[in-house]
Image (cartoon, rainbow, N blue to C red; front, side, top):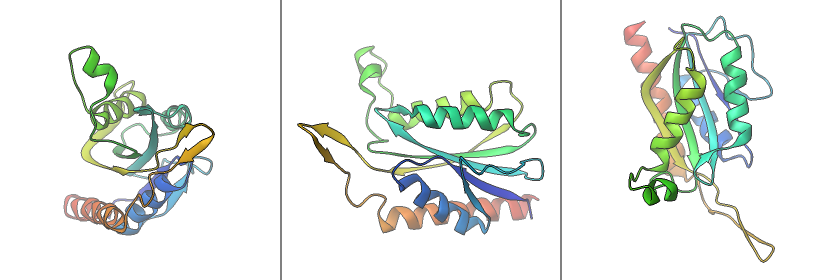
Length: 171
């Protein structure tokens, strides 16, 4: 069995929930961005963060750059994220006449940060789901209540199980 770990950056707990379910499916440990272990012994690193206004959060980008400085050369990396609207067209791309979904931009950005020097293998296996939407209007905060749903968490666990199966048969 390939040695794997799930690492995540979470603000409100949604990305953490998803990360924990992926780790459960893989049967591996799950750590947040403040407790990144030495990664030399891992073959597969599953990495996740959250989106704010259609872009990776500042904290998420910092987390990915920190990972890049760790010993990840030659590692296989799978990506995931949570977003209020991953399947929505990003408004900036629509205005420029090249409409792209938030999920496309997010995965592309995560890959660019982690694989800046082409030292890792970014797997095509990726997962995303709804997370919180926090909008301030007249002092009110509105949440995307109920996300991630039990179904989305079950899908995250299945994603982890599929990764495990893939690496058991290839490793």
